[in-house]
Length: 443
Image (cartoon, rainbow, N blue to C red):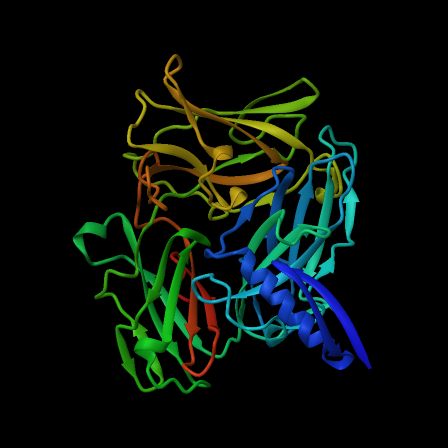
């Protein structure tokens, strides 16, 4: 049996193929369409301003990093809100990436099972909120779309019929767990970082993988608190012995500025002021939350308090369902400063805005009040954040201005080990582990 297929990719093609080859053809065409849409490395981005509170975490642990194991039943949960009075039809697909977040040069059929895209059917309207929205949710992988290979992935969510115009893109990782990783975070010995930094000492055992050239085929990435902006990328082993590779304290490639414990505020309730909230007003049909003015901590001694390491947690005290009963409120940030700092900008940074430096979290300087200020629309919950001074043209910056760096600070370090087999066309994620600066063992 022959089927005539008409498809639009840059131009109209009329092809004749046996039906049994149709699905292979569709996989190829879908891959070509996806690859032609993005030419730069993927980042976590929201393209539609109506999309808010995009969260991707391991099922059962809202504060986890988006990493799952290929060889068990772990799933990721993707949540997001559409701020609108009416729902819209959204589809999603998964794209395999190399270690640097470029599209892998493999077919969709190489890394996915089942369908190549699917509609998000789980969505509900908000209840008893001043800002009306629809809450969407999917699990990854699921019975319709499965994952065959380890590595980096992005989930791309887009309106029906327009995959080339995504609503947002979110990154996640799938590990094989075939490498055994032991990591410890220590105080650096270099004078420059002795009081301000933290260093990762890593031992990796390749018990189940034969790697001929670890110096060129093994790549290590380290993320502090899940932040890609100051990640240590493509680290080469300092020492190789048999099936073990090591990253030691003699190198300065695995040193981070430690930062400070994150600032925080609690907006789970709109009836009373909680931690670091100065007052709550209601006008123009919306709730407005004014935070206590922030202090400059750059030159103050270190003081420990328990935080979420830059993450946030959606919650509501005046309802039962945090997904649909938490309202959106305007949050007012103020940071007193005697003068405006030239040569860059001040941003409010945290997982709640994907650690991004965009207009939504850019602070402006008010000369009459001698302070930086910013207003953000956020969903009720418990938030961590910090202030970042980003020089013009820079990709990222340590939290030095207004925050300070202390070697005692409690941080998570997500360690990712990639393997590129010279015979393959993709990068495998063979192991991942979290090392915490306050713990002696990684987990």
